[in-house]
Length: 139
Length: 65
Image (cartoon, rainbow over all chains, first blue to last red; front, side):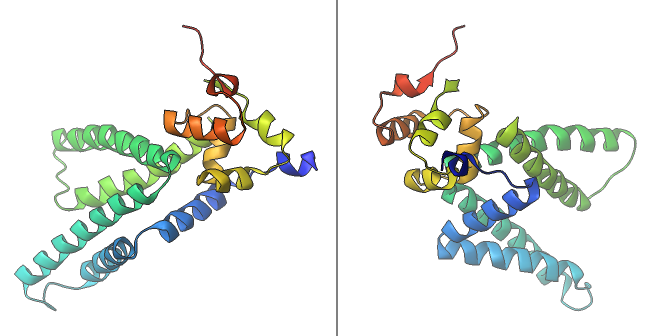
């Protein structure tokens, strides 16, 4: 019986998926709605050409979608347990340092990413989150 | 910080998932605490100790520095 209780380790990505789903489940409905709308908004609005919607309106909607994603992520972090909040903290720290260095280096070499720098920061955050999860879980 | 969480959990034949549910924590949090990769907050440490019916200092041992 003790052998059964000693359990229990899954693969990194499976465990991350399980915990992410759990954190989604524990979020308040309003937070879930905002995060869901934000993610869908970002995807849909970035596929749309500027000719499909007036340019200013499209820009406003894109900004609102990003704001919704950020608010949703904060709501997700607040709903999580302290271990998951620590992962958010580590991921934000990694992201701040890495994105600052990368964006600065790119600018110094004359590469200006413009609005795509947001995608770079988001990508770094996603990688940082997985790394922080792996580091904090097993060291 | 060293701790006896794994030992105390196994004495009670609880899985990591069961212990997590009793504490309102994820299984990953229990894995990280048992692996001494994550030091819980004072609030959680007290909750854990009460669950095991132990004093905090009987569950957690601070490293001497």
